[in-house]
Image (cartoon, rainbow, N blue to C red):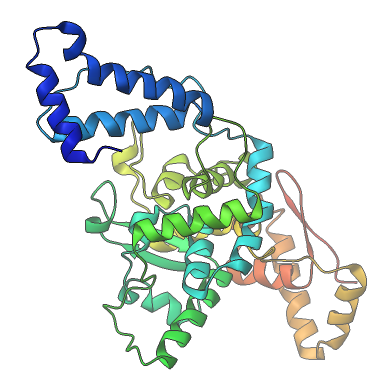
Length: 350
C-alpha cells in the first residue's frame, strides 16, 4: 500500500516520461478505481470518492483533468412514503439518543434548521421565550451563523423546549455555568452529523438501495417544508421561507418582513403535525367534554356561554387564526369548535 507521498512521487516520475501511456498511468488507475467502486458500492459513492481522489492530486501540485459522469441515480428519494417513515422513526431516534443529541434532533425535526446553524446557537438567543415557557419557542439566528448571512427567527414546540431544559439541568449538575454565551447544543458539527447517521442506521431509516445517500438532517428540513406548504394551513410562501431560514423569492420578497409573533402564529398552524413527540392538541371525546364542563364553576360556565354568544353574533369564522387567540384556546380546550375546510362552526355548549 502506497502512502500519500509515494503517490505524488509516482505521478511526478510518470509525467517526466516520453511514453504517453506512462504519463496517463495515474489517471488510468483512478478511472479503474471508479469503475470497480461503482460496482461494489453504488454510483453516487463512487463519484464522491473519485472527486476526493482527484482533489488530493490537485491540492499537491499534480494537475488532474480526468472526469467522471455525475451519477444518474437520485441522492435520496423523497416522497410521501419516505416522509411518513421519517415521521414514524424520528421519535425512536429521540429515545435512543443521549440528552444533548436528543434535544438537537427534536429541534432539527421541528424547525428544519440547518445543523451547522443549530450547533452555534447561544443560550441568549432563546432565553426570553425559553424562560417564559412560551410555545412556540423562538430561536434568534444571527447572520454570522446562517448560510445566507441574514438574521432569522426559528421556532420549536414544547417538547423541544423540555428536552433542552433537561440537558441544561444535567450540565448544571455537572458544574457547568449556563450564561447567555453558553452553547445550547455543545456538539461539533461533524460529530453530530455522524451520530445522527449512526442512529438512522440503527432504526432503519437508511435504505439499502445502491446509490442513495445516507439519511441526514436535510430530510427533516424537507419534512418541515412539506408540512408548512400544505394547502390546509394557508401559510404565505414567503413566511415558509423565513421560517426555514431561506431568502424569500418572488416580486414581493423584499416587502415580506413579518414580526417574530406573526411568524410564530403561522408556524403554530401546523403544530400538531410538526411536533415530534405526539400531537400538541388532542380533541377530547364527547364524554370527556361533558365531564370537563360539569367540573366548571357556575361563574366559569356563564363566562364560556357569554363568549360563545359574542362570537356567534359576529358570524362564522373563516379560519382559526382569525379568532382572538384566547377564544380559540378556550373553545379548543373544551372541543367546542369543529374544523371544516373553510369555516369553524361553533357548537352549543349543551
